[in-house]
Length: 169
Image 1 (spheres, rainbow, N blue to C red):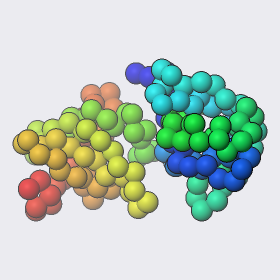
Image 2 (image 1 turned 90 degrees about the horizontal axis):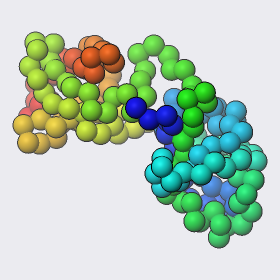
Image 3 (image 1 turned 30 degrees about the horizontal axis):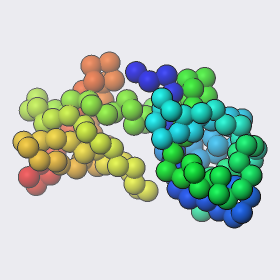
Image 4 (image 1 turned 90 degrees about the vertical axis):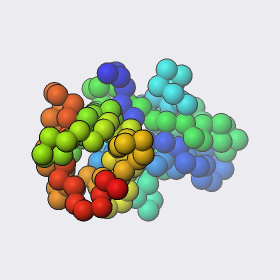
């Protein structure tokens, strides 16, 4: 398992002083106010530690000013990069919520023990996440809501679902 945890990606620059808009991948948008530094890079392995100078929230997205980036041209170089934090800066999730990296690759079964496949992607949407599962040489999308997700066992890496008619077609 990774020692760093993804918390967002840099969507675009804003203004001329090097601020960037972040697409958050986190349960608690206010967690960005607590950041003193964050790893930024195209991959976890290439990420560099940057000090956070300031944070503000606009339209449910953080706008971050890094101490070492003072111009729009410099900020444009990190657009598309990922933000990571170390284990000690990870937030605690409420019961029933999971980090995307914990869900990825889990085996999915129905409550009747039929094997569906592995989770290959998680789509974070405003209302709820969607789990993308490889099933019989295609992909099916399962909304991550209590109506369909009946059990999550992180230790065994298994999710049990109650599909409705047409969900797996």
